[in-house]
Length: 172
Length: 202
Image 1 (tube, chains in turn yellow, brown):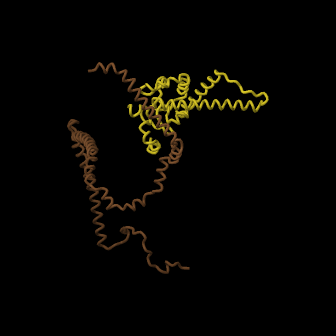
Image 2 (cartoon, rainbow over the protein chains, first blue to last red):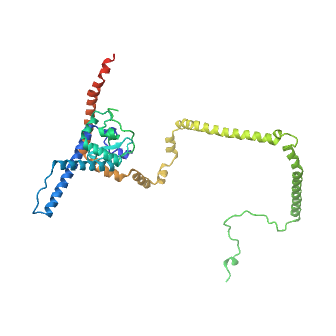
Image 3 (cartoon, helix red, strand yellow):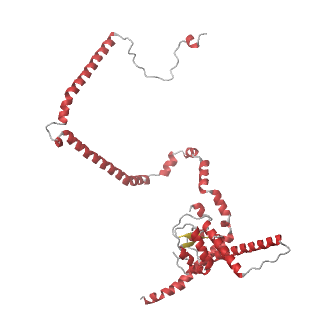
């Protein structure tokens, strides 16, 4: 990281850059991601209803939604969204807002296969995220399974290799 | 129509002064002729003498250098070759030693000398800094620096999400909450786990 990039991060947050993110930040990012996926699904549903109304206004009825369909669509949308985001940039929209990034043990961006498995685990067992609150390395269950980490990274692009992920200054 | 040089036969000014060489074909006085003849005889005699010495002395020197009845190891040529080999080895070793000593001591000596000098004062007194600055392409330097630090990207980043006070505040709040929870977990959970061993200790 050069000085020009460093200057973009506020002084108070600089010591935390590259260190493992905690439960609150990750929960907030996950909540934002869930909202993003939910909003996108609502948008798709509204678009679908609108198209049906445009093409068949006389026979128009609001299509009924089963709980199973909503759950499956949300699960599939979440997995797709998380996989694409982690594979492309290592961060979802929620991660971007909260300034965190998913990295491998070698501080690299995760590959497609690992991003997909991680997305599956996150969507299937979201409760596993809570494990990072009690894990000394702040790793959730899916992090431990796939040897990934979530670190604070406020910069828009992945920073250069800054050593292995570690906990915050108070815990190092 | 006659040209100007023929009307004014003065010599044209020499642009380049060439070294003058003696005109060997020109006929000189009798004295010069005698001196030249004597020198010619002397030169011929010297060449003949060198030829005679070379023809007569070479076999003698060769036999002294490689005596026919002396063992090969004791011949002067072999002895000199051995000494030369040892000398070459010593020369390599000495060169390496000198290099090592220079590497070891140059920085120390220069540091000691420079630390006793007021380099800044010397430069200010003896160097025309204005002339030096005039030689420097300041505009080009600034352009290079801007190109290296990628200023447009920095401006774009700083005016984007990074500049949002709300996002920054949310992130800092998240970090603070993370730290608080980590401290709390560390204090309660791990201390409780460690408590049996700590109570056993004296």
